Length: 321
Image 1 (cartoon, rainbow, N blue to C red):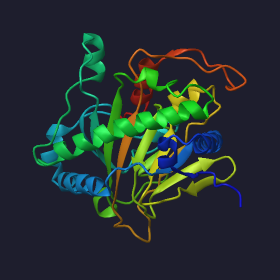
Image 2: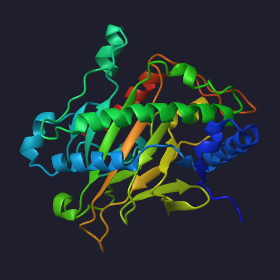
Image 3: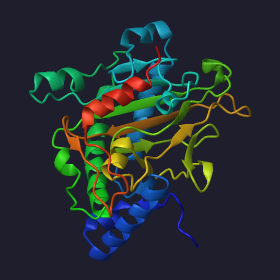
Image 4: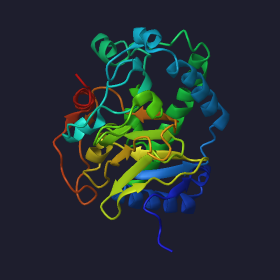
């Protein structure tokens, strides 16, 4: 049988230190990231009950009246509530799509670096809704685990690229990250989708790695590959869905592809379907200079970029209005 385009990686053999297993896993990861830019990862050790509790707390907030949520309203890249119509991810591809059919609670790195200019842009305090009093403790616990997992994944990616394991993590001493709790309600909340409108429009992510805890649904995640076009993403309730972003693809000289994906609108045969995703976007330290690895590993030598000038331009591109 041929290996699936999006394989499932058990992290336990990688973390155990078995040389032969680690080498095989690194080879599988390299192959997958060259074709789809996606993986499923099990063996991560993160309690599913924690993810359920976060969803329950966030759902209570999302179902509040819009007037109650409005004081927390922010633009893309902010810390708070992204309401209906705030974001259109298709804009990042230059497509003028209708706004995405979702709401989000967004959080981001907030521990200051001591650099006033960097802190003012990237390390501001988070806004925690008073109407969801238990959410802060739950999310804070989850975010600490996401940071650890993301660094483990970056060490695996360093080895998969044929570089030292700290090739990427040497740039994550004080990284930025973003965390979205995305709520995808049914048509009774969002209305009938317009032509070309999605829960999240086709796009690639912007940073290094994205760690997604998702739910299966008819109006769920699809992944694009040259071989298969748009296909429903594989789902395993025990796994996180991992994809790399534009910054990582650039870093590898386009050896790896930034995983293009979308989230389908509420399905016509299940219009009340409600899904919620927990999405952790990992990046790197501000002012990191990202240079493409040279040939023969890399395929394209992109000009060096300041990581966070690059990321800010990407975030601005998907803001509506």
